[in-house]
Every structure is written in C-alpha cells, then in structure tokens.
Length: 133
Image (cartoon, rainbow, N blue to C red; front, side, top):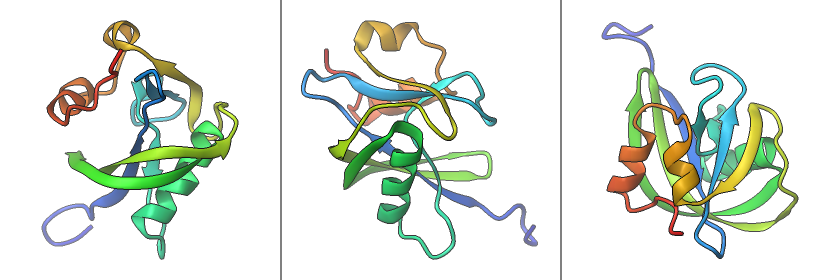
C-alpha cells in the first residue's frame, strides 16, 4: 500500500467481434465478479507490455490466439485499472479455460439478458463496442 492508498493493478481486456458482429464474452469463474459475464482479460504481469499480456490472457481464458489492435478506452474498478483493446482472431479453438467458467459469442438480445459485470454495458455502449447484431 502506498501513502495515498492501494497500488493500482494494471489489467487488459480484449474486445472481439466475430464476422456476424457478435461479441466474445466470458463468465468469470473467480472473484471479482464470479459468475458474471465480461470481456476476457486479466492482469498485466511484471515485465509484460499490454500487448503481450492481452495475447496471453486471451489464450488462457478463451483458447484463441489474437492480434491486439487499438486501445478503445480504460476504466477503473476499485484498485484495477483496465485497458481495453480491440483484437482479431489469428488462430486457436474457442474453449473456456483458466479464469473463465464459460466463453461464448453473444448477440444483442443475449447480451441484454446476461448478468454482466458492473458498468460493462454502459462502458461498451459509450465506446460503441456493443454486439452489432
């Protein structure tokens, strides 16, 4: 802990749409947010760049190999500073792993019906990154 509070934890998230415009989401297996749906991602480990961390986290949680794209935005959730990037699939097979209880592509109707992590829908709406179908 620093003199002004807890040290922030840098995290990354991957915003990934398929060709149909569906958004890739994971249902979190661990806290924070256990059981809630969110975009895949996690902590940046010491010595990693955001790009390296994003590739690692996406493979661990979704089974997909991705190419990171542009920074879309960032949010602060408690002590977590989350930097969200677009990405594109380069390979792999979709399967839940690591911190993900489930992983799936969701359309607008499904997205609206899921139990999401706090602020996710509003944040993605503000960034114009909601499912497009």
